Amino acid sequence: MRIDAACLPTSAIDDCKQVIEENPGAAEVVLEINTSSGTRPLRLGESYRVQHTPTLRAELEHALAPVVAAVATG
Image (cartoon, rainbow, N blue to C red; front, side, top):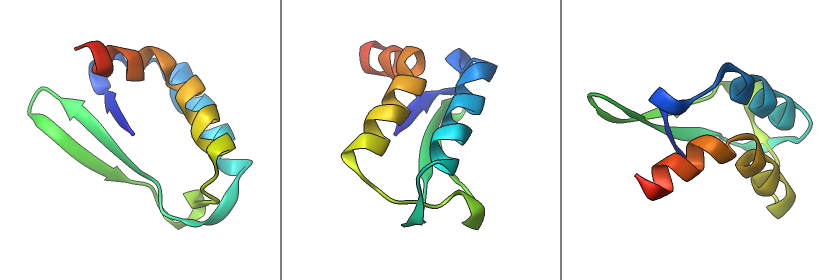
C-alpha cells in the first residue's frame, strides 16, 4: 500500500498494528511511504508478517482510508 506520511494520523498506526497482529502469517508487509524527499519503502519486521487475504487488505484499507484517499487524489 502507498501512503502519504504527511497525512498519517497516529491512530492509523495503532489500527494497522492491530489488524496485522490479528492476521499472522508468512507474507512480508511493505508500505510505500510518500515523503517530502520521495517514496520510501518501509518493510515491517518478522513479527509483523501476515496471511494475505482479501479481508486483511480490506481491513488495512479501512484503517488507512484517510491516507490512502489522500494519495489516490493527490
